[in-house]
Amino acid sequence: MIKAVRGMKDLLPPETARWHYLETVARAVFVSYGFQEIRLPLLERTELFSRSIGASTDIVEKEMYTFLDRRGESMTLRPEATASVVRAFIENRLDQGAEVKKYFTMGPMFRYERPQKGRYRQFHQINCEAIGGEAPELDAELILLLMEIFRRLKVTGLELVVNSLGCPQCRPAYLMELTALFARGLRDLCPDCQRRSAANPLRVFDCKSKTCQELLAQVPTISDKLCDNCQRHEARVLELLDRFQVPYRRNPRLVRGLDYYTRTAFEVVTTQLGAQDAVAGGGRYNGLIKDLGGPDLPAIGFAIGQERLATLLSQQDADLLQQPLLFVAVLGEAARDRAFELVQALRHQGYVADLDFTNRSLKAQMTMANRRGAAWVLILGDQELADGRAPLKDMRRGEQHLVSLDTLPQILADLQPELKGV
Ligand code: HAM
Image (cartoon, rainbow, N blue to C red; front, side, top):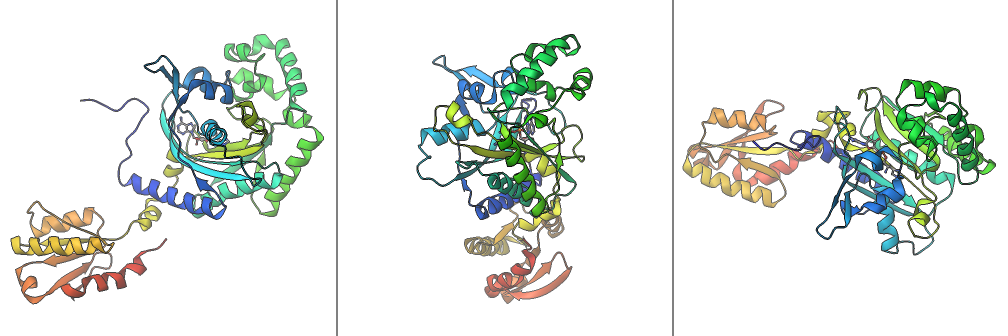
């Protein structure tokens, strides 16, 4: 038997209904905030990611699916979407016009991490980026948007964690100070952090090793060293979160796992997912577009992990999005023929209808309808054909009514609205 690749999982019903539901809700929220969808290739030149995410991050150092294509060019399956969005933005000259450009995209990402619950090698993100706006109101808007998605999906028990990572005015001095501090206590850092601390000292904050964490408890954080502009920016973002009653926790040690962030950085975490507790993460990346050869435009974005979000959703809510199914149970050849016609006509009018072709007993067909979650079952045999009327069983209420076959679409139209809850 050929099995799926480790860390890559099949998405099957009924879970697909949860995904459909969360994507539909997210799309609706994005649209109401003025975001438009873009779809991008899964494969990019390796350099795009090493230059944007940062050469000494975990993602670039050890998690990328990188290979040489047939012409010997280094290609990488995207580990995240921000770099690709920026590449597409620059390449397609999307910077025309002064307004903030707002995009969302959904799809698979690839990271060669150690698979565990909530962590996969192919996973999916709902990603959103706003390019061309510097104002702290935009940071607040994105966080409000993110929390609105969770609110509409009725996901509770989340915590928003925020920090500011400074800017090119204030961060370099802080990093120098940090490097010097680490150099003095270098022997106590884990080997990974020892190696990285000179090139990228902020990465140490992401290290899970206990000794590194203990060392970090004593060092100043970037929050203590922000310049006036960064302080003002952060204060305004937090003020807006307060105004809109979005609870948050400031964590001056939140650094995120990617190097492109400036100023606002945030994560949404939950205690319901075990070790992989981040449902979403994001932040500002004011220098990235210029660094990748584009115009000097500020930007901010976030990504939600779809696998993690899906596990927090109720199946019942997701099922509400499904159109109710009418299952036609048949007895005999003539009835099957008529049922096929009926089902086709209903489908043509946009209803969800199905029947069985395997010649099962009525009992077996009822079981089938139940398993499929049918809202109604129409029972059609020779007698019903002759009468032009058949019993329609309402599976949720357990009631049964005789209905005329000619007026079935009308009857369904009348029944449908009360079942559509979303
Ligand atoms: P990230 O924090 O690396 O940020 O990923 C965002 C979310 O993707 C995480 O919070 C998590 O829910 C999910 N995720 C990450 N890795 C895995 C995995 N191996 N398995 C399952 N889920 C995972 C970014 O990717 C940034 N591009 C976000 C961003 C957009 N920043 C600005 N714009």
